[in-house]
Length: 121
Image (cartoon, rainbow, N blue to C red):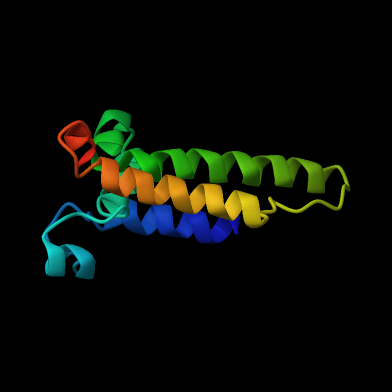
């Protein structure tokens, strides 16, 4: 899991997603003209790998939060496994999955409102 995350970060560091169409186009954005909750996520990770935290947050704040949470969960898991504890990286039950889904949808809707326009990529 760590290698997959590191490999993705290296790819996004080396191939800049700020160029239009560098990784294809978002089908939701192409059809509706509105950004989906994931729009700007690749640019946010690229900005993080460049050390530009403000740029990353302005590209996709949700992606930045998810990177921090996943990195923290992976570090905790690696620490426990290193001490010989049989642990999972994290478990997401029905309640957690519902909260995550509601948060992603709320973020996607909020960034389309005048109050959340600062969250648009």
